[in-house]
Amino acid sequence: MPLVPLRILLDDAQKRGYGIAAFNINNMEQIQAIMEAAHALQAPVILQASRGARTYTNDLFLVRMVQAALELYPNIPVVLHQDHGNSPETCVSAIRLGFTSVMMDGSLEADGKTPSSFDYNVSITKYIVDIAHMVGVSVEGELGTLGSLEHMSAGEKEDGHGASGKLTLEQLLTDPDQAVEFVQKTGVDALAVAIGTSHGAYKFTTPPTSDVLVIDRILAIHEKLPNCHLVMHGSSSVPQDLLKTINAHGGKLRQAYGVPVEAIQKGIKAGVRKINVDTDIRLAMTAAIRSWFADHPDSFDPRDYFKEARSAARKLCEERMRQFGQAGKAPGIEFVSLPEMAKRYKVA
Image 1 (spheres, rainbow, N blue to C red):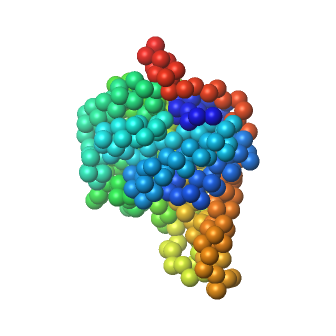
Image 2: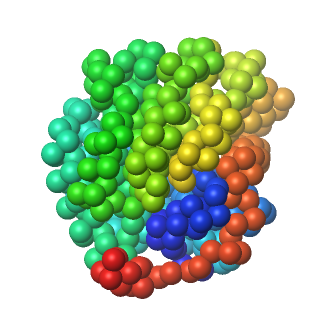
């Protein structure tokens, strides 16, 4: 099955009441792990690449590896999504490469650091929506600034993308009324909302409460936008057993907590359809590699320790697919080509 537009998966997820993990990819082993998990569970899946991932892997290698995965697992609906596009140029280059979905993150200016104005965000996001929909590609926008309510800052940056300096409560929490205006003016297919999550492993210093992880804000937005697909960014759960394994084998990660799976499941019930997961895969692979070297200090064959890393990543992905409800949903999803999707956008 060729790549499908993001909108097709999100519409199905809304219809059947589940969420879809969007896993970040950087190398062959991650793509293999995610696709093996999706095949085993017959789950639709979103593969997403940041600007940093595209640079690290090289666009041609990245797209060819995804194409190989489609040939190996032809019955799995797959979306290739540009994560945190910082400019029209980033999004257009992804569309030309064959990505079926792009995120125009107009919540920050093109430098990826400065919080933008609402008008700037609307203008640049709509510009990409108009271009993308002409060729059937879906668009995710973002309203509000991803960051920690504990520290009132963006926290870790994703490949250099994240607000600098202190942020206000208004910036860190998406306003429901403003969300309605944003969706109406831009025509986005999905909306990433700010609820206190952030990139990286160090999201919260203690298990998060409703003061720093405002899941109820999702419900408030969903009540005003019942037909809009919502997205949770920074949603890795930071499994404590993985932190312990890494530190027990030479790592020095600080104590940290992520977004509890139960909170994500509550978000899914409140309208979240796409859940971004990156850090958890990194932690799983790092824990496996560190454990391998501790048990096999004479090892030097990358195939040995990357095989362990791939297996650990697959296990993590299968777990999230079950928890989010996407397992078993692949057979019921309609395939829609980009040209057909473009016609649908035109009619709408």
